[in-house]
Length: 432
Ligand SMILES: Cc1cc2nc3c(=O)[nH]c(=O)nc-3n(C[C@H](O)[C@H](O)[C@H](O)COP(=O)(O)OP(=O)(O)OC[C@H]3O[C@@H](n4cnc5c(N)ncnc54)[C@H](O)[C@@H]3O)c2cc1C
Image (cartoon, rainbow, N blue to C red; front, side, top):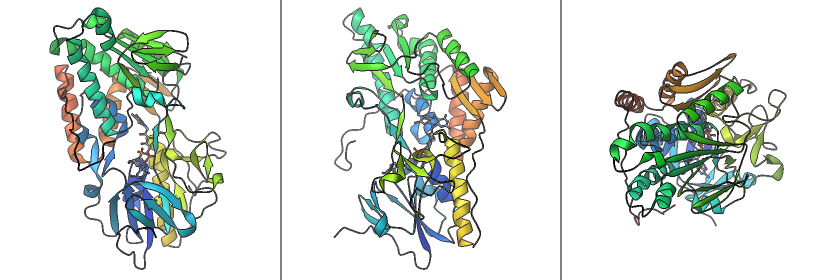
């Protein structure tokens, strides 16, 4: 018989279990009325992560703690709320329970908001040899890899090795790839020559390899052109409409036959859903959980999916919604209202997405914005990007700390967090 996770009885209240405390799960947990439900939030990490700024942690611009927030702190004053740090393994819908690594958790309503993971498109060897950017810990690993490169460069035995160490290949021309390339180009120009005066940075190359026909494919053509022009102006070499075939260190082979020699391949080329196992086959579509306009998973009344892992195909969204933060937040708000309505004997409303536009930064003083009919780039878009992100970060201390770091970096043309901190293996936790 399997173990039951230790969670207080919900009494007369229905238990709502939320799996995943990212953009969607956290918003739902905040908005649900806890006098109607006992809420159990489970996440494999004990903190929320603000993914859009991972690249800034990776390039030494921000502390990881500025873009993360402990779940328990978020809900300190909430009654009928329980957080458990654990990993959900599968659902047993017939028994209304979730199997986790701390035991079974029963539910009355279940919400899956487990987001996505990095997609290597079936080429698992790339998982071992490249660096991803999907968690705070991966951002720190990337930061260490970037910093280690320059330390290694000082000891390069010849010019060939030096160029290999100083070459950075970023795979994926979406917002993350563009932002990472722009941040590395800024470092190359204004920071690295001061830290490493012995290194010839004219030998440092930043390559951006993108399989789509244009960068920032989800944004307008104007934004793509703007981003490509700015990045090229800052020395980034763009390989467009081309995919990576293989990486046998140090050689990256791309599909036009080009070989790039590097020790640093950063894989930000795509995502795949973390959909939970155990549901009927009809519940899954392209790996995501197929939901109706109330976010109920196909075939289930009491199981919902929101955020990146949910796929809602309707007349308004024939291909589904983009996997972005706004969709996750809006789905969570709608579901919270509907579940609160259930407890108050009111009816439900369908989810309807309001596209508030897209922003992507390309580096210092440069960003692109698509806001309705308005498409613009440059300094104003960059300021807008900064403010939107500061306002979106969870926690007042974090907002202030990010603001101070950014003002400091802007005035000094510098980032101050170039620390190479390596956790030593500890018996207390499993190494991932
Ligand atoms: C590098 C990067 C940059 C991005 N930039 C932008 C941007 O600029 N603008 C934008 O709109 N969007 C951006 N996105 C996309 C945006 O972050 C996602 O759309 C959003 O996070 C989706 O929210 P979610 O709640 O569905 O998933 P997430 O926020 O990913 O949350 C999922 C949560 O589930 C937990 N979890 C997963 N599996 C399990 C399990 N089995 N058991 C327990 N817990 C589990 C995870 O720990 C995590 O906390 C970016 C994404 C990345 C990776």
